[in-house]
Image (cartoon, rainbow, N blue to C red; front, side, top):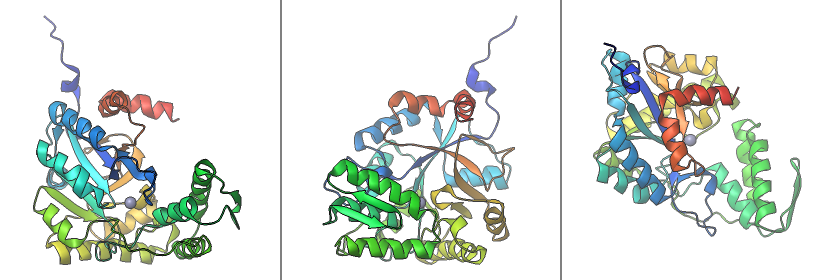
Length: 321
Ligand SMILES: [Zn+2]
């Protein structure tokens, strides 16, 4: 007699789904932070965590590392929850939900920021300058933009972001300073990310902190020497502030190439998280090029469930061909 196997029993061993979040927050039009990095509303995040805790096995970064370096086996239907950038709203909005469901998670920290938690990321500074700047128009090397209402301003934000991403890191930061000045934005002190005390508290409560460079440059826009400094420096900062750190790294904006991956390997990083879409079979994938599933506000409850399914990866890859 032929017995029908349940689909998930066919899942290969060490098959991992990585969820990527940035911010968890409700939309606030008055906020100077870009809403583009809000991955889920507070209620949406709670629904997603309820779903994964019921239907999947949420694993810790230690478990993923042990699967890669010691050949240990992950449970079936393994999911790991990751957050990039260490935004302050993780403390108020995501952490209580993770505690409620007793779920481990990892935060990738750009380590130049927690010591200066009022130092804003360039994309948030650009957003603030263009959305809240005094001027009704902006002209510069990127083009001429009418800034008459929220829609035209937001469209300018998007175009300028793409423009900034083509620069070297240094040029990009100079451009952000210039546009902030031109638009009359004063540098106000405001807490964007968690400080070290807050991160230390997280680390004691089931949250792994891992390297995400120091200053969050796009790694393909800086020299390989600087890639090395940023990666190693980030790990050293975490070791100094937290006490221990796993050899794990997330590429800012996902940007990586063969040379960058090689540097990470030379510096003994064991796991590297990209923004390549999909799931990862740890037995076959290069562990320095792990895929992730980016959660955004457009991720409906149905799409969230589908994107966690193993077979959906193939459909999704085909869709993006
Ligand atoms: Zn990041």
